[in-house]
Length: 264
Image (cartoon, rainbow, N blue to C red; front, side, top):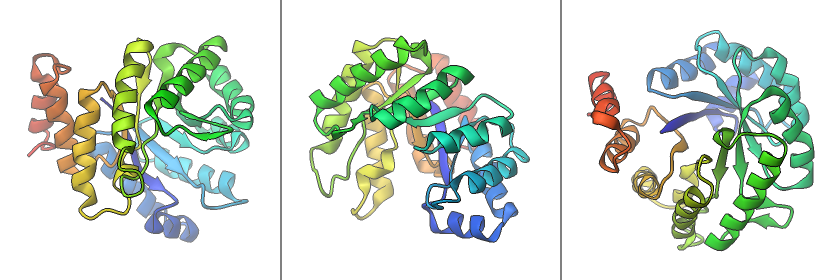
């Protein structure tokens, strides 16, 4: 399972405050904690700073790269913002994200191709986000066609079928789980990913819902996730389910995580 660590996001109050205050130590503490917790990419987002996003994101990138060698996930819908931070990156990033909306395809796809990055592709078009399994799979097909047609390898494509809060749509999780299974079968070589915390929005005991959804998603073929790796119970659930479904040869990832103190 590829883990994109989600905590450095300006939509979180503490992160926004740290960015505003120029609190480098706080941001770096988040980066170090997520690195030590087993992340593969550190997601960085300054999206709430309208008009200042590029400058704030540059500051975050520089701060984070001082304390971790992990590559970054550049989280912005704005091609100009992504373009502005690319020269600062020490390692090839993952771009989060592209959609079928013309502005995103036309602006972000050339950056993906030029820099040979991995990319998260959301099942969303100019007509809105996909809510049914059928629509999610159809948009996934269009995304794969667009991306591979431009020369992006399937292995660099991470399709996010999107999950919406169960509190507003009780069938959202089921539609996403079914879509994950179909996408993985229909486009072998591509990946599926999910920002799973949306599923629990508005519900009590959100972490419990997130863990259960992650387990179900992995059994349907999910092979990457945008999560908080410092949540030890969530991380342990991911490792255990990956083991159970036969995607951990000789149980080595699980044993390694246990020895490292990440599974209790």
